[in-house]
Length: 154
Image (cartoon, rainbow, N blue to C red; front, side):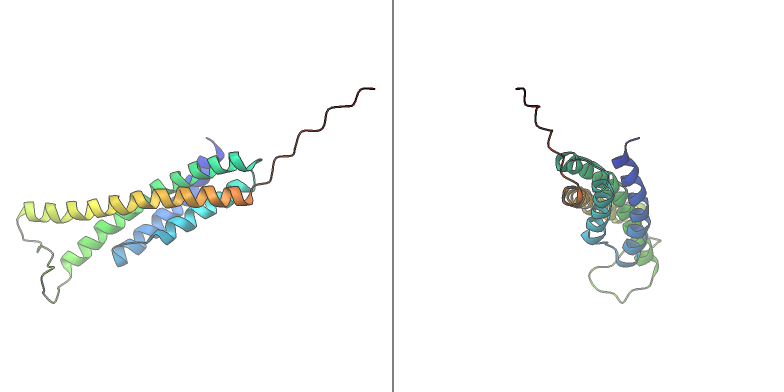
């Protein structure tokens, strides 16, 4: 397994738990977690890569891997938020979740909407994490040493 994938999985697993917890409490975890996760992956990759071009490619890969795990965390947290909202008594108003005794189709539509929102925000998380990984990896990578000049023959 390549280093970008390893770093992406490591940071992404931490981000998955963080994203799921924050999303369960707030319903949405903004792109800040994605940017931080991508930047951390890019930092780890940039310090081990030789050449900014390769570091950028590896940073994008590692950030995207972390972003996929953040997508999973966003979906889990979003669905948990819907469960919490559905089972907590509300004040009323036009935005009422279906009661637990509502028809199955109404509940299914409620959760499908939450799943769709989680996937949508999760796809944005992937893009932001990949972008953060690329930029930070290129920024922290060392330049490739120029090749030595050819020997002068006299």
